[in-house]
Length: 112
Length: 118
Image (tube, rainbow over the protein chains, first blue to last red):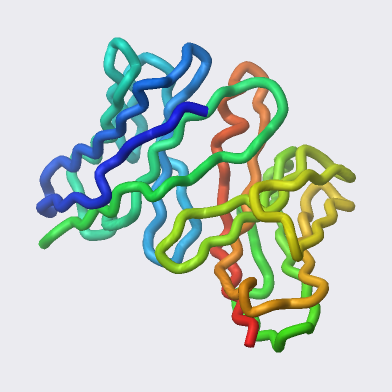
């Protein structure tokens, strides 16, 4: 799986959009980008994933650059409850199941 | 719809004692996983299963055993607990969905089991 790089921490004002970047410059053509988050002491929660098109669901939007070497997770109106560690994971699909590797992620703090 | 349920939520053991953590999912998922998370660190995969009756080692399998006798349950056992196994344990499950192979990497996690070994 391609390696990902995320900033260790970010702050965002409540009500503003939170834009979390992820670099995955070695991503291959059959690898998807997945985002999870982990609120303190809770189990990780799946947010969104995509291959090359931008994706949106009720939680967030995922913007993937045309060359797929980076992506941005957007929380359009951040709330205090969005304070969490956000993990960007690149993973191939198909074949046998193997582990998802959760790196260090980005600690997002939403400030009142 | 309970999703993934882990029991117990908290447990304190003495060194050398044994115990089993139970994970149950009601989503008919094929894949199940056990992760551990130490303070300030990311998740590390202990063991996983791709179906009933099958198990495989993950990144940190030593000191643990697992069983998947029923599709909905995945048990994690510690035969002789050590202080190094003090951690929070998370179970997760996922599923292949016809027409959506990427769904296998969409994991649903349990709330965690906090284990302390003295």
